[in-house]
Image (tube, rainbow, N blue to C red):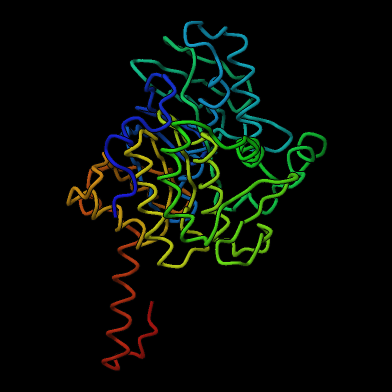
Length: 375
């Protein structure tokens, strides 16, 4: 099913901005990482790995570096003092270390340690920082001014908690990191108008078919306006999986997910049944084809392999795709990351490995060998 024609994809949400995809991230001694370097695809980037291997932390780190400066003037360098303050505030808001002590984000080991992070984007632009266990942070910058617009979608959906959340977050201490606040602010924008609206409509229409209606924001609350004669349904009464899809629909409709933006999506498959996961896979690919760079983490076999098959066989729309495997050699050891353009080329694929183990257990049960209960 072709949702958007090639011509529409090339012009989708074209707001005249210059393409500035995230190109490279180098990390030394930060969070769960010892020393890693990742080169990203300008299209779709898929992170797989067991729990506690740093997938979410890596996305939050990249997000914390580019989000504070997306509204900077493209022709005006970022002032160094402002750079340091913005990075410190965003790291604290996104990671929420105890009492805001950023030194706790440095890789844990005996003695003092220093973290160093560098993120490349656009044409040889770079922004980064060094951070010690004692807390001091020094920012680095090269040819940097504005950064690409970005959206972070956490694994827990935000549509149901949207009502009153922005005001509550600004006035009280809440147990949500700043990605939820940023997402709710993005959701608060009104829908596009004109030619960009028409292109966005073509992209969201199939998802509205899945939802059974249109997503509307009214009186500070989200609703699904049913097309099956059921009237309007409060968002918090919808199944969580549907609320996640509804959030993406609204972000596309209001232009938050636009051409040359970066989407960070943590576990898109959470609380979705397999039929909806295939729709999400299609949406991700069409967003990437429309010029949205995507960095996503998944534990799901179907989602990762839907994207892998499309990349391997060049399914329309053609999307540059890269896969990353996050692994630890020991439970408390540093995380290492390997990358490939095809999922089958990754030597470490915990999703596939566990499915293979499941098949082996099934065969042992069928054959009556040791009861199939041996791990």
